[in-house]
Length: 339
Image (tube, rainbow, N blue to C red):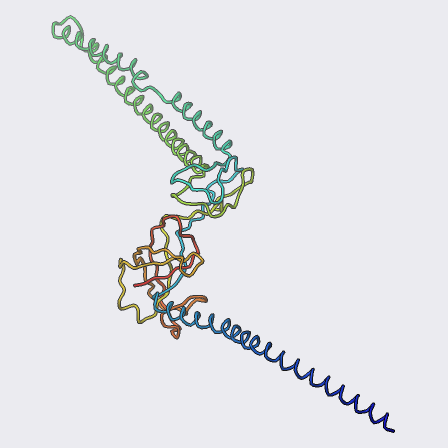
């Protein structure tokens, strides 16, 4: 009985020692983990609150930094074909810069050229058929001159009594007849020449039309700019009004922005403003001098993605600000303006 009691006491003591040791380990772990948890929570709050504070500050700064925002645009032209036929040459690439008046390609002109040669041959034929009035009436004119000489001789003989009056009357009648024949010849030849000249003039205008059509077979660039898109290739068949390529004047861009009605009072056409163009980073921007080129006459609802000074305003007015491009501005790039 005494041995059992001793055994139970020993077991109880071992359990108490184990519990005491576990308690000491828990207390030690608590002192180690508590600072780590506190540091982690502070870091998490810092990561959450810092961007939020920056966002609020940036929003406040951005609100004060600009009066209107928008995107840059350029004067774009879609160059279309003015002739029908196969494109024999079309040497442009997207992104290439073209000069004003440059010939960038041409359409097949074989049929037009042959038609032109046919009209030129017709002109030569008309010129050959055209009568030479002076030469064709020369014989009749000579006969009249000879008859008048004979008339003068007979008049002298009649006055001297060496010839009768009938001979003189006959020569006078002959002269009248020859003069009428000469007038008829001249009238007929003049009409023939006039008709030939009119026919030649008609062919001449047809030649001018063909020259114009031949000129339109040349694909000529309208103004200096950069090719934005190419819609056709050499070897394709084109037709009048079919788009060939799109070109834009990138030397002078326009910032299309939107303002509220309250901002209209302080603006006028030609006014110089400051334009800011962003390049991806918050502090990476360029400043340009711009000129107010256009103000819309009617209000419209605020386009999607556009910010204004007064975000509560539903109706805005579009404006365009001309900016000289130094090579960094791109079409569609975001920009801000300060009046």
